[in-house]
Image (cartoon, rainbow, N blue to C red; front, side, top):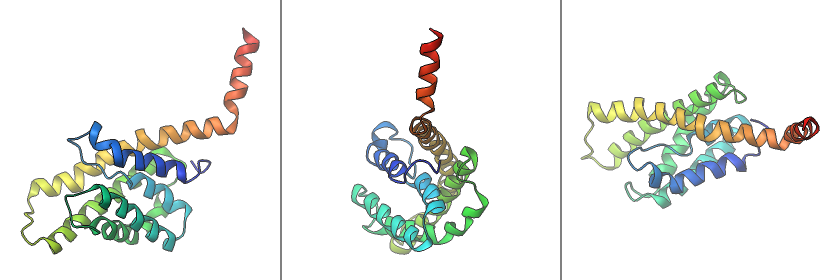
Length: 175
């Protein structure tokens, strides 16, 4: 997955952040979690803080549910917590990347709950909210990372490597 430039997974995440609620209105996924998992492997700690902060601002612009800036702070704090964990997950493999995206999603959800409690004192914490946000959402985010990120990035790497041209030449010769 290192063959794909960083703008490619960013555009996948941005597309899902903008249009994802239209297709999956019942499911709340953290659109940038897989992008963060990829970016943490490629950029420095300080750049990852800024990148997460800016992605949070993008989500803040599209969200009217929370106070403005809460996602930016949440994603920056998530970057602080999860950046060092990148050494336990390999970027080139699909499953570890999906698991890392799930971990980022879980930390981000927990951070968002804590920040919401800090700014909105009447926010009710129930067992259903905790299970939904810290267990179910990260599992769905890991599946989303596998389907929406690893498959298109592997297709991109296959096309950019030129192997598809050799495949087409072989099929034309055999015909």
